[in-house]
Length: 376
Ligand SMILES: [Fe+2]
Image (cartoon, rainbow, N blue to C red):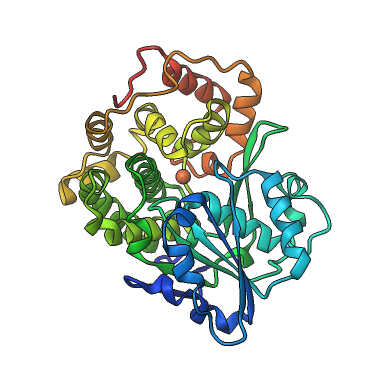
């Protein structure tokens, strides 16, 4: 067998249709008659939250829980776990961006776990199977978190961003509804789209890529290349295309893993509070130069078969969206810890070229240079 990943794990059901999120409570009925809907601020501001919660099936109790925003932290997961324990629902639904989905995924997963969330970041072998089923409906396109078993969480007390994962954390039901992306602001469209694009690229070139995942990565890359700029500029007709592409990139990375761009983007993002997708885009040129020999054939394939030049594409977007590299001219004061975190990352381990401590240090220098080779 060499077409499929050794183990294929997908959401049990994916409903992709305009307006499907309005059927969330009906679709959730198979998991039980009480649920908690976790969401962000933007859903609350729109009329969609009320519309989703309006008229649940007879006998069903659903309440909303609002995530205050920002990247999800281990403390926010602990707070949601405590809240869920109070009435122990039958299911949890996350309707939001990657932060909301990661938060709900970890809280539903760890509901019955005896230790706090930070413990499981440090002791991944102790993570128990998920306590509650998760429904995920993304409002950005995006992290692909709706199609993975991973929850990426920040622990501010240790200044780290680490994932927790378990095969049972895969959402049982995914709803891909373009109407959820209509209110997504342009800066979020850009950052989320960069993340999806870089995830598609890194899963395409990863050490663990298989023909199955490469087809998905390629589909995602070409669609995002075509759709992201007009979507950023306000063409919401492309929301469905972007949603499908980020979902496919999520399935691909879930099986193929990523690479050094994500290995660097997480510790950089947490130190400088930079949106994850923008951090990925800014790390891409230096990392592509580092990997160029190892991925030469893939770059040629993308160019000759799809007319896609990955580096030029990112540079064009950064210029068109008037974005700058926020790392240029910055200092990392804890370089040893930074290098340790990057080398310990599962993304770094999947990079197509082996990465040493000296490599990380020199990549960091390039990314932090005042006149860094940035896409801007
Ligand atoms: Fe990412």
